[in-house]
Image 1 (cartoon, one colour):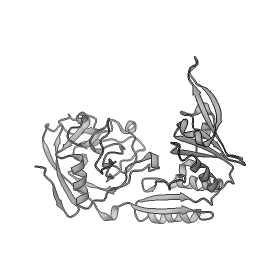
Image 2 (cartoon, rainbow, N blue to C red):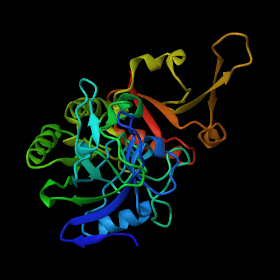
Image 3 (cartoon, rainbow, N blue to C red):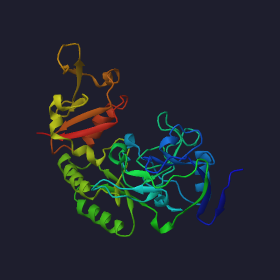
Amino acid sequence: MTLVTLFAAVFTFTASATGVEKGTPIEFLFAGPGTDRDYETMFILDMSVDEFCKGIEACGIPRGKPVDVKNCVLWPVGCPLELSPRMSDFIDTAMPEGLPLSSAIYTGGTRDRHGACEASETMPLAAFCLYTLSQSPIVFDGVYRQGDVYNCHRAAKTLKKGEKVRFALSWDEKTRTKCIELAVKPGNASEILERLKVESSKSAIEALVDFSPELTVAEAVSVAKSLRVVDSATVKINGCVPGHLFYSAFMPMVSWLDPKERLVQPYELRLGSTNSLVFIEEDWSGSGLDPKLTRRVIPFSEAKEHPTDTCFIYASPDSRLETLYSAMNALSESQVSTWYVYAQE
């Protein structure tokens, strides 16, 4: 029988030790039954990951948001949790220089179409992953790429395989991330930044910032540079209004202007008196290490026949975003999900 007790805002559960030896690199504090990663996991839950999440939510801990790159959610968002016994009772942590450890949060992880927790083919049944993994219901508040933090979490002791430990998760409503929406319009950039400053002084915030169609490209670039300065685990600039642009779209790498410096070849959408769409075909049949690149102007209607998920937009600095949004909409049947804007005369 699964041991679950619900009272107030506390969720208690039991988990069984995997028996990994002291000093073993740990990537998962908790994983679900049947995981194939027990060699890098400290504990296996005595219930399914789905039951674990339902128990957490039944006691009042709200579901947050996992990382979702396609929808520009680049920071995990959720309720900070207190774990007892503490993670440090079982895990020795030495973070890389310049990468501070953050709080554990409950995002709820990614779900299938029925609302159940998903398991990845390569990282199945994660319940608390110690790097940023979208399907893990519990992750850290910061963003930690697997390669950056590998080996920084190690087993602090050797527990007998199968040894059961009873844990409690609790939370404080006052620490919950506040979500706000902000519309950037001509002339209100300072107002937007002041709002972010005021709100983040009260609590951690997640901000959905919308770049209004009335803005020029030059104005959008200026605001985007300011947002990059404040974007952090405390002020999370997350998400994008459908059909509009995420702030980082206005700050592409200058080196990407050279097709040879790109990892992939995007569409190139050039806006002017007439709009043109360029598809760059890669031919790897030659003897060299680099492909032959052939540029072809194609109708918007043919974009879906040459699949790429990235598009570079070239527009004058005084172009209004409504012009960009209209052109983006013309590519709605393609699979483009990542956009970058170059301000060019």
